[in-house]
Length: 135
Image 1 (cartoon, rainbow, N blue to C red):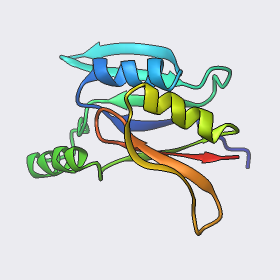
Image 2 (image 1 turned 60 degrees about the horizontal axis):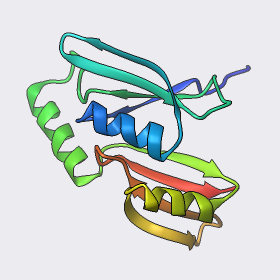
Image 3 (image 1 turned 120 degrees about the vertical axis):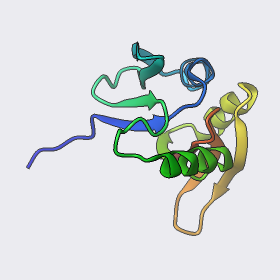
Image 4 (image 1 turned 90 degrees about the horizontal axis):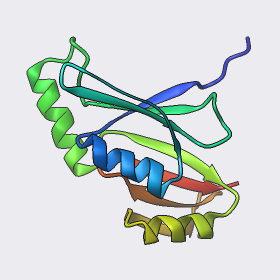
């Protein structure tokens, strides 16, 4: 079987702030920016990796999510416990400095973890946790 990860989804509660973060702070390219019925989906991804994307989407848009679940998702986003993504870089310190200078909310500075990687953590404007490890 030959499978690859093509896209992953993260919620946003402010599309313009999320776009600015992923494009201007992380340096991702914008691949699509579209809306429907007052909502907005933005597809971004690392430059040079056209087959790997993150879709920033309105939270809880799935019609099977009921109002209680929708409120819970919004509450978890506000606490920063709903969604996360793991990125990798060869220049951990330089990447950390760029994100810190770009105003990213720092959760953890570069640290050697007991599970064997050196990484740091930030949150995007919607509260999603982004861990970046060194390759």
